Length: 401
Image (cartoon, rainbow, N blue to C red; front, side):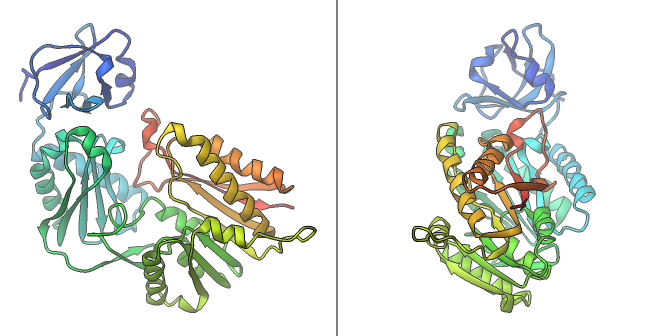
């Protein structure tokens, strides 16, 4: 065990957040270093009174100078990563016992800042966004092979945040072989997924539990699935007994994949599809002449848009966007109908998001009854002391009148 690690001393008053469990230490919080440190190296962190707070990876090029990975001194070898990943896996097996595709490691949520690992059946996808993790890729991959013996391990480290760590994009097959798409099982439905070239690490796993939960409102109804991507919400609704599901997405590729997924699950006859900008579709379908009214057509409307905001500065624009889609969706929703709406931006909190819907309800003179509140699936754990781990929020409201 290395007990002579370089020490990062924090300024007075800067230790509380770290003691509470947040892993990031910013440059402005550091009093001094006791020795020169190479970027990516393991350092120990102490408060101004020399009390050990933990160890983490140092990077002078990043705004986040240190990412804490343990409260005690550890060796960041293959054994360390194996134990930490097995611990994360246990959480998934407890909370998503039947799942075969899920997020195994969710960075800060699993105390491995800068590392994401997604499992798509027998294929793993690794995404690394921090220098310290990048330098230990070999140990991480070896640990993953030992735990899962996967058919292939891919890297999809193409996130823009890598450049802030002094890293280039890095993509490709690290272990094994993979050609073509992977058939991913979510709640017993099959979704073909392009892991090599698809969005994110292939698809959105954070809605897995919500797909099933929202589908309970679909039975016998006319359903509109907006921003449908690969058909997650729409196909779950169709299987749950919806009379018909109409799926909207501006990506022709996503719509074609949704059609194939509908056919593969025996649900094609219940589904129709439009490749269109969802805002445009909603405008067209709520446009009326003076003294005319929109005729509500849907019993369940699902809104699951991509993030409207990448930073705090764009929050006002994002809220206008959410209000716009809520306003138009409410016009298309039958009295007694159900609206399921989601926001995946960390910068728009739950209260602001709900306010955007209630403001739309006020403007359209509707009263809503809230019947469910959702967060990200449990394979994306939320650590309240690390606010960045909580980003997905969702509501189900019934239109009372």
